[in-house]
Image (cartoon, rainbow, N blue to C red; front, side, top):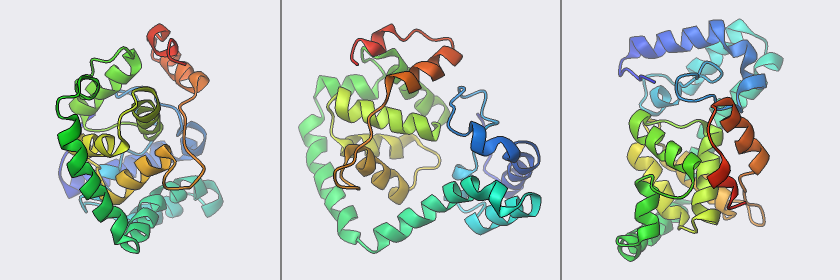
Length: 222
């Protein structure tokens, strides 16, 4: 995956996605086929994050190609980032509390071997290690993979979500303070009280069978 930092490349990527892949988006968007097979998603988020494209422009382009009914899921996904920004702006204490907690946890876990193994991709979970390497090499992860990653980080490796959110922000080209922080809070069950996200065996198994990878180590833990 290559993200070239230019307005021309951003517009070209938008046009190619709308013309060639948007029609299949709602059907294929939840599948992670690996970093070399991203035609099922737009991969526009790094350009939106850094202002080379904006949400209105992306939505307008999609609606010139297809009706709202055919575009609804894609438009919803584009607008989630806008929603999270507004949500966090109205609750600045959520961000300040996160920074305070993060500063304390950095000191507490700086020599924790479980944490060091996680950020170095040296855990007993092959799929997780692959995602760590992919994140560092490509500065991007599929949205569903980010959820699986966060779930394993929190509930399997038993690490603080705040450190996981920081790890993402250190590497993601599309790292957005609101979307990233609140997404990790959602997986942990903090953003929506009483509801958390657990990575499911069947879902990850299906993806890794497509990618022809060994799942034995992962499912020893499930």
